[in-house]
Amino acid sequence: MTRAPYACDPQRSRGRRVSEPTAPTRSEFQRDRDRIIHSTAFRRLVYKTQVFLNHEGDLFRTRLTHSLEVAQLGRSIGRSLGLDEDLIEAVALAHDLGHTPFGHAGQDVLDECMKAHGGFEHNLQSLRVVDKLEQRYPAFDGLNLSFETREGILKHCARRNAQRLEQLEPGGVGARFLLGQQPNLEAQLCNLADEVAYNAHDIDDGVRSGLLELEQLESVPLVQNYLREALAAYPALKGKRLLAETIRRMLSEQVYDIIDATRAAIHASGVASVDEVRRAEVLVVFSPAMRSASTELKRFLFAHLYRHPQVQATRQRAEQVLRDLFRIYAQDESQLPQEYREASSAEGLHRACADYIAGMTDRFAIREHQKLTGLTLF
Image (cartoon, rainbow, N blue to C red; front, side):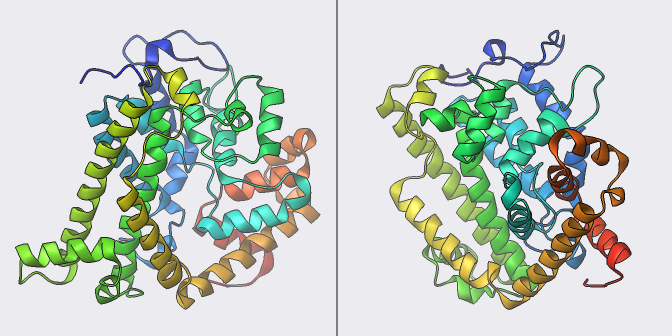
């Protein structure tokens, strides 16, 4: 596949924060992907919650399987658009490296605990992981990824944090949030593939868990259309196969929709380079009809799955685990591992506590909480 002129070219990368010789057999973006896959933070994703805790069932998605699904969707779409598949894969695999245990409950608790100390954003934490917290190489902290991968990882960033990043790295990954610019198309694609993957696998996990009924989803137009298509093609289909076929058809249609809508947006914009992409509006998009349908599905999942009493009960226990851990570490620094005690002298005890907790898996946080408090919440 010929690379499009508006795609990122690894030979024209804006480089790494610490200069390194090029690899003889890999592009810069392939090298980024490989470093991410071999990182400690990536391995931990297998035991971090998506919606359901890892120990609640072997078939539910985790942050790791979610990241793999985003990468697969991203590469499939990117290939049709002439984008760099290796960069897409690198961003997709790294985008949740900074996510806390217990999903968004963990993000909210750490942000609350860090309110007086700079706050907590999981996208910024993912960048922090690849820039600083991974300790694998003798010449630098972090993974020393290329600029293009790093800008894709930083999906959202509050202005105050963007200003701080700009002070540390003028013209770096924080600049676009201050200038009102967009990331590269590969990063934009990962953002949308993330949404597509979320919606699809949360339907699957919700029905498998028994918290959702397939009949409930018939009220959601995006699901209803493909459920009817599946039954028209296979009238006797039911159960897991009907669910899988419905989701497969929904995913396929969303992929084709993104390809068509994005091609049209790129053509209308006239962009012919990565720099022009950054100065344009968001170009990787759904059609208006698909955007509306996807938004309606998200509203349904929020109301009927994410706010389900069983999920909420789990969330409340998870919040207590992380609040207790943060309080204990902040009051008694000796409870932190040596490397985090050493880091606290440079960046403050509270940031060291947040870094340590954010890196935990669900099950490690549960065990650590039980050890330090004597309470069994799970």
